[in-house]
Structure formats: structure tokens, C-alpha cells
Image (cartoon, rainbow, N blue to C red; front, side, top):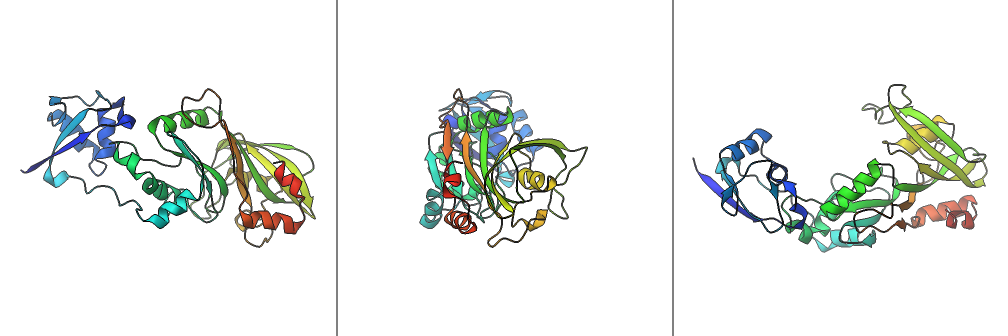
Length: 313
């Protein structure tokens, strides 16, 4: 049997990670059983010494892996490398640090998938990616295709871990702007149980056996029988804002999937502000704001919402 020896150097984003987890990302095409077999065969070495799967990799370690040629991975799908893709992503950037990139996602772009934020970030950060064996930049939460606004992308493993931990602990605050049907009279606090996204209708419905969802909606202005609202979700479930607004009689205008009225250009749902705890263990700004897309700002003006209501959001 012919073998190939892969020779690599660990980078800062590999530091402190278990060897098996590094290889599971690096050799992502290999079945887990094959990766474990490499350790049993003493085919994984650091500075010439065989290591166990539980040992940790450190920045600067020289890692070699002796792999049967038939199992050598084909490698990552090529990241976008053209200047146009980089300019597309750069135009979205609100804040860039060593740990995260905060972007203002436009309407119509996926968070994950072909042409999505994950692919664009992968290309934009290619130099940082090449300095690491096991880190791939990626969005740390998600926005629907036609939802706009703040999206946080990891630029380091430290940033990914710190933001994800704060998000899981409920310490990340998000504010959205939305145009909803009906007149929302005063601030409303809604708590519901939501089911999973339906594969058939691609919608989320109330479900006593589902997950808890909570948000606060506050009116900022009115235009006929529509309300410009600030929405602050306390949880982060798929389609949560769209589903809860519809459940309480205020679907997003233009959101036909959830029973909203017709609205030229589709619904407006924009993540306008995000706040993270001051003690977060990464270089992440305590707060970031994202301006409305031009089309949404024009629509709000045309409908007669007062501009100062938008600015005050």
C-alpha cells in the first residue's frame, strides 16, 4: 500500500485543541473511524513523536500525518478568490478585529450556502485560514435570506468561542426594526412554544412540545394600519420574529409565508443593533449599529413613518 506523509505547522487558532479534533477538520473527507485508526497506527506525530488522539496541539507544532494515498482528502472546495467577491464582502463590513468581522448583510444573500456569507468570508479571510490547520471562518448566528442587518462572523477560534458562549448564555442583545401589520398599541412581551421549521411549508408554528421563544415588540410609529416596531428577541430560534409576530396578530407586512399583507419589495426585518457583554474574552466591540438598506429606508419614508422614529431605533 502506498502512503503519503502530510507535513503541517499548527497556527494560533489551533493552539490548545485536541489532536483528534484538529484532524477531523483537516481531514474532513475521512470517516471518523479512519482518523482514529491513524492514531492507533501511530501515524500522527508532533516533532517526530507519536501522539494520542486526546493530546493537545500547540501553536508552532510541526505535525505530520502518514495517510494511505487512497484516503488522502481532495481538499476544501475552492474559496472565492476573485477581487469582485472580496469587494462584495468588504462592502458589508462594519467592524473588523482579529477575532470577528461584523457585517451588514444585504437582502437576498444566504447566511450559509452557495454564494452565501460563509463562502464570501472564507475567501476574504483566506490568508488567516491558511495560517491555521483547523479553523474556518463562519457566521456565528444566522439571518434569513431576506432579513438584513448585523451578522457576526468569526475571524479566530477565540472570537468564535467567546461570542458563541455569550450567545448561548443569553448575554448578546439584538435589536431589529420591522414593519408589521396592524397597530401595535404599546410595548408587548410575547412568550410562545415554537415547533421546528416545517420541511413542507418552510414555516414555524406554535407547538406545545416545541422550544420556548420570547421577545419584546415596541411601536416606534404608525402608517395607517401598519406599525414600525423595534423587536428584541430574548431567544434565537429559526424564524422566531416572523412566527411570533404572526401568532399575535401582527405578521410582518410583505411576509406572505406567515400571512402578511402585500408590500412592494417584500418584508422589512433588519438587525439594527447588537450588544455584547463588556467582559467578553475576545476583541469584539461592546455595541455595533447597522444602517437600514437604502430600499428599506425609502419604503419607510414613502409609507409615512417619521424619520426620527427610525433614527431613535
